[in-house]
Length: 320
Image (cartoon, rainbow, N blue to C red; front, side, top):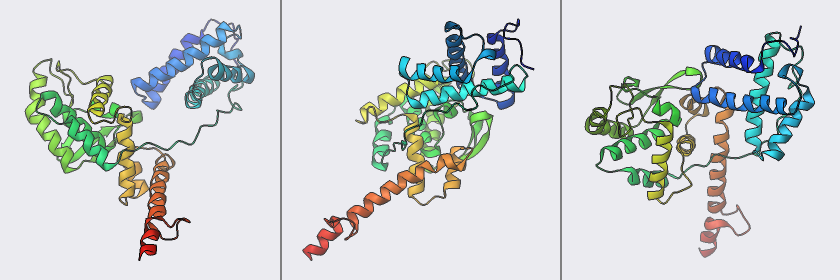
């Protein structure tokens, strides 16, 4: 039996209960919980301001109208609208399970169709340029080089790297990463990243640590505290600018590059799935489209009968 929309329990209290449920049952990160809260507060405010009543009174046409407001009023991208709908759906399903609702108003509401966008990957030469721009003899440069090397060597998300503790370096070349839902995975890292980490730990981290209170964090800021996610974004922006790659590099770009280069080198997609911490292999398979494009480009410029112009190989045949 659905709750009376006018009963004392407020939507704000229900939202708090739902977020506690997500914390306990799904172990979501602080960042993910913050995104859920922002999406759902926006939804509940919209219902209230439009005199549509509390969430228990929401109808499918209300949810559809809310999505139209996000698209036309706030001019959000399809990906942002889809994410917001996912948050709203989860909230409605939770309230249905709790007996607050009799019907899920989101059940037949469709998310906007997302454009098929392939991840942007750097070339190996561009990654090397980025690392050269990070290199230096200052404490911060040694830390930054280790961070960029590790981003590319592990394919980890930036939030996963700034959450690392020194104890997560299990042994040389082996890293323990805590991903979404607090799931742990073991990731190998190459000798270049290990060398940069060793240099940072021996020559820089000890000095940075002395500037603040004791912390187990692996990556430290200039005041000795754990490096924040935003600070990591900012330092990567500065390094990209020095490498003449401004606007083309984010922490996720290096994650994309990691996956793409592994697959181009012959790695199995399920191995890459495990390294990236993807729950489903279908998420990882988008990178196979990237490598297919690369193969197509190579084929078009190399095979003598790939195009009417013949490509470079065809030119060589004609010249001979």
